[in-house]
Image 1 (cartoon, rainbow, N blue to C red):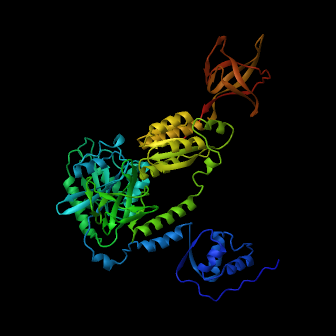
Image 2: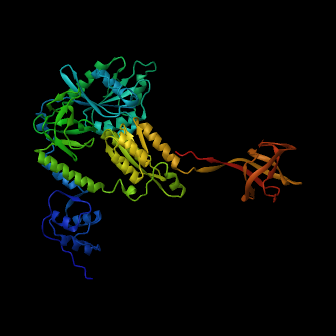
Image 3: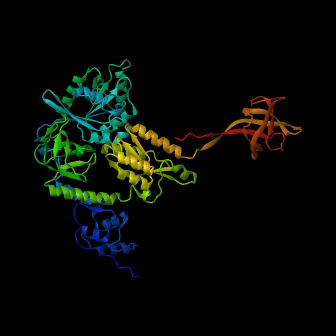
Length: 612
């Protein structure tokens, strides 16, 4: 076949970076680069690529053509190109113009509280805002992001309380992204812990000021110097030592040092000169979202710019709706919320994604169109990603999966995960993914927010899945259907208990592995023939301990010539249970008689290798 020659078109390529979706066809690619589909096909044919105008192109093909014509492109996943256009429609705020920003009024600082589990973050906030939220937390661990406002003199401070458990890394990272100042809480009697360093990494990544609150100063073993020394090694050198980091020694239990901490925060906020306009349509971030039985989808948002008002058409990811109500951190209904104000939003059509941006659209029609487009491309991008194993029938429930491993297959555990809020759902899912092994894979048939329903149970029965509920419960109908369909439902309130149970279950799925451990070695010195017993090896135990009924390898010149068990063991004329190194003994083997001087008898046992 004659390959048509390719000649470059004289048409100028578009200026700037052109956004191109991966797997675009020649018909899609050509017009975006001021070329025809025929131009693309002809060029690729001359380079040995047999393609048609409607065939999806690889990244290499697209980049090769772009390089040929001198175009600058950026490859994105399906749907991202539309997102760029959607952001233009929604007029996302651009705060790069320093001159404009400097004219805006001062806004309250957003302060994120981070630190290791059980170092007292929530109790510290509890003391600051004189409210008791600790008692409502399962196991004393904060499970959701909470946002609260506190008034200090003429200033207002906005606090974000992030969970301290390692499983909530992603939630903590989102807290850092939405923050102006980080309070790193470290227990004076415990010092720097792994999650302290993890929180510090997030804070540094956010490039915001960090103030250290050394908590639990009322404890007998409090050692603030140790904490400061440990953190100084990580770059947080105290001001008292010539550094730039402010430290506050506090006790959330007694309230000591709280005023100093608040004054330091107000001082840092003044230096940072934080500004935002309250004019125009609001934009910000979704801190948390969940499904409330009586109120429907509820999103906790932080307004970053503009004014959020009841009645506004709000869009966040694929969720949208007209704001039906705004509720502040005190549980009061409000009409508007300005910059740095956290509020709960009611009126969305579905549960928003934690960490997503939100913006007020020009009108309700635009909001619905944007959300619908995002939903479509989200489905395209994730099509078949989570349920592929279930659709193929390759998954199994916990109690069935051992048979798969016994037959040498890679076991796949199908899971349906339901949680009370999106942040918890994301944290549970990410943590479960980390438990995967070469032998046992996880497939998430469904992940969702809200209670466990009959539909969930029916899907679990169809896909042979186990249901995990985090802070949610099945209703009566779902429980009855689960009993009928023999679907396993596991409910949890503490995330590390959920992870521990699933990890233990997965370890139980694995076939036990054993290793042979040599327990003793004896050298044959003399052979005795005993009526009815046959040959008995007179031995000297060279190492370890020789034990009756031990498994044994018989070696001659380093080669294993027989394996079996010790049938009899004697010291002189007496039976013995074991003989230690340095002693002589007589060894009778179960069914081996070909003994020679110099042979070695090696005893061993099979020990199960702990699965880690």
